[in-house]
Image: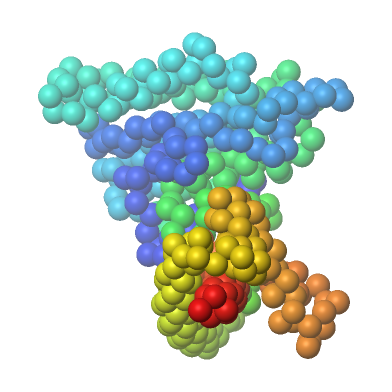
Length: 413
């Protein structure tokens, strides 16, 4: 196979496991089978993928308006050929019209056959049909698809992808063949490795590169990895620091896999790792301090709420004894109205929290955009942490209610 593109499937061990090829558990899980019969591993997998931009156009309109495409991988590896034998196969892409119906049913039946052949209770008599059915699926998907490419995947993650073959009736709709090849690569990467240090929606960290030589694309892969490490390092987030350490492990593994291919740019990994560990420890300490302070404020606010509710109960219980006092009557009516209209109370708390956040920033620069940005960040992390601003404003409101309750009761005595 003449490779037009090359890239790398991330693996921290420099050793991909072909046993899990086909499995993807992201937002759109793959349908797959991966079995070994007569010392040969057979893989069939397909997945529905929603792309923001359609790959194919016919004239001025989208060929596939909803942006859904079906990707299919048919591959095999000779297990008897040694531990470094590559995985070889094809990746194809379909629109709904080409996939739904007979083609999908045929592929699903082939996957079911492969799965049953690996079950000792159902495998009898099926072994001889696996290779033939696998071959038929390979021919079908390349004949019926919109486009396909052949690939060779080495154990160390190195990938070679051929030129993309496009169906005759779809060639006029392809605007950029490189984009199409990249989508084939992203699908293959999705079903061949776990997303351990990044979200599956950001699986474009490492791209697909033209195979002009065997060194340029390696440098681009390495630069992409270290760029991601640097970008994660900028965020003050303990989890992101952990992801950056995982990316650093990928980068080290790729350097090892490429050490015999030529000189690569040097990065001081020990210094990067020490910096990430230090930042991670510092952020962990800051989070512990914030959690401790939040716990203290939460306990305090619980005390204030309990006190105010008790005083409120006393005020309502003795309402008939001081009805002539307008402050008391007004206060009780207001409290009752707020308690009944809890939505209004919640809105008051939120609005007051915003005002308090603005007030706290006034001594610095009340016209600066960081004010809005910082509050949006505080709201963004609210599901994970007790909001310090909300806790404090609740404390202020509770103290005010307590003050009104106490002064009202004292005036009636």
